[in-house]
Amino acid sequence: MKLNACRRYLVLLALVLLGQSVVWADSLHPCGWIRDDPRTAPWMVEDKTVPSAPRSLAVWVDLSSQMPPVGNQGSQGSCCAWAIGYYQKTHYEWLEHHWNDSLTSHQFSPAFIYNQINGGADQGSGSNAAYALIADQGIATMADCPYNQNDYTSWPTESAYARAIPFRGSTARWFSMTDSVGI
Image 1: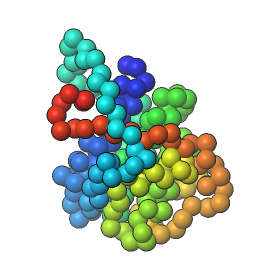
Image 2: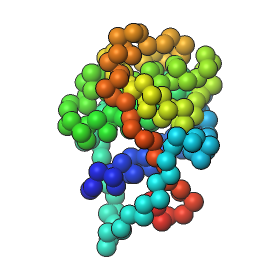
Image 3: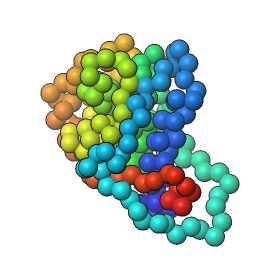
């Protein structure tokens, strides 16, 4: 799979993960994704590339060998930060470095994102803000910024900020999911 196609798939995966967190939410795992429109973020680029479809699509795809271990947001409404930071960014870096993503030094921290963009309240966050933070500051690893479901206000340490810089994202992209053409 070409890298651009893979990145499009991972964006879709993150959106599906976010959507599933809304569908399957219960009192232990509250809904935390605040739906926002990427068209309202002028720094996000709409990807209008129409990929060429293979002659036949796989019935299923299993990326579990490329993903970090399943995490647990606990009772915190940080699902957006988990989907984008922990799963998507960890997977992107795995694609680039092929490192062991079962190590906390190779997993990216949802707390680094959520604790900075939630406005000091555990009431969820939006994906636009999460992508903007990664593009601007990068993202720290779980080793540098551990996740604590009971702490949604502590900001990262100075060393976590410094170590996050090499993991800045480039341009954030989005594509329309109003039909199946771009998917």
